[in-house]
Image (cartoon, rainbow, N blue to C red; front, side, top):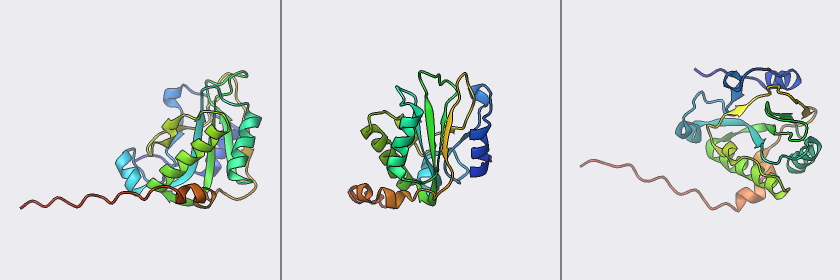
Length: 182
């Protein structure tokens, strides 16, 4: 079975990050379903975080804070630089706790919309974060480590925050009927 981690433990890692080789670094899939299978996560996942990975030409951290606050308002977030970050190249991750869990498909849509809003601000998040079973590496101190956090406030209600964009999505196609053998 896969291990679990709480928000308070994540915050403790943001404040005092691990310092290990990437292969040994702690990670999470933002769903409570104990599976790394995409199909299972899409169908049965219960997601409690949105996240973003900014590795290519990332913004300065204070700019990233402004972008995140522009998306989620005064809600809570954890932003931290990745192990390979440098002062001049602050590769970073954003972790946004959710007020309500999202199903696999709702999460996938909201995750895409988060990335689109970051992209609209002029920066390119890694679209791999939109994978329902994609690993998000937790804080791991490298040469340069710098966090930004907002811990006072509500957790983000993604369905309300992205309501207009979600309403504009085409309806999901109906699943095919089961095959019956004669």
